[in-house]
Amino acid sequence: MAPQNEKILAPYGVKGPLEITLLGTGTSQGIPVIGCNCKVCTSLNPRDKRFRTAAFVQAGPLGLAIDVGPDFRMQMLNNHLSDVHAVLLTHEHNDHISGLDDLRPINFKYHRTIPFYGSDRTLHELERRFYYAFDDHYEYPGKPQVKAIRIDDQPFEIEGVSIQPIPVDHGDMMVYGFRIGSIAYITDAKRISTKSMELLQDLDVLVLNALRFETHATHLTVDEAISLFYELKPKSCFLVHISHDMGLSDEVEKKLPAGLHLGYDGLKLKSY
Image (cartoon, helix red, strand yellow):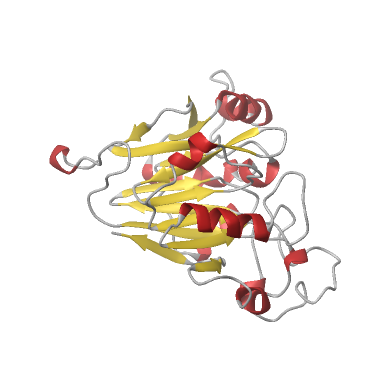
């Protein structure tokens, strides 16, 4: 889609601005949590209402969804987005893949098959759960038109846009973050290796998960995210995959160092 002389260069150089929209910034239950009457779940502040974590990257004409969880339909509608060229999957947990069927209107409108990029393990699980979408012998008019493209730790391109997978540890499993130009998106991490830290240098924008203040076995805490922020030194950093246990958005924001902020649903961030 990009003219050859405007090809986005591997691994990090990008011609023109990039924009990432935080479609959702909540943990797997979302906020408010069903049946919860805590101060966060009953807050009237829109920034305390959080869909499941996902993002959308606009790179010139190319639109990339990062994860498609159970809130994907409303996330797209709320942000006036309608054109997805490809989906980048961080991993196969339900809050990151269960919105696959919501891509069907995009298939119908643009007559486009949408590729899903992910690790072999993630795509194997996607193909198992959504067998009808990937089975060439299973046909019906409303079937999602998708294809699976397996990736590893090496950079790859989509329509001239270079994407660097960032492997991180999600407790007992490896998941992917992604770097596009000077924007990096990391969710569901507990540990980031030295090798992956090297891929996260010189960032304009870092989106990073932080579940809560208390220790958790598979997710970064706020303090752990702050330590990474100081070490990586991005120009700005925004926290996502937030639990209602973290506290009210306005109160938490006051506790964060300069340059580090709580993300919120609908936030748009640019890199030039």
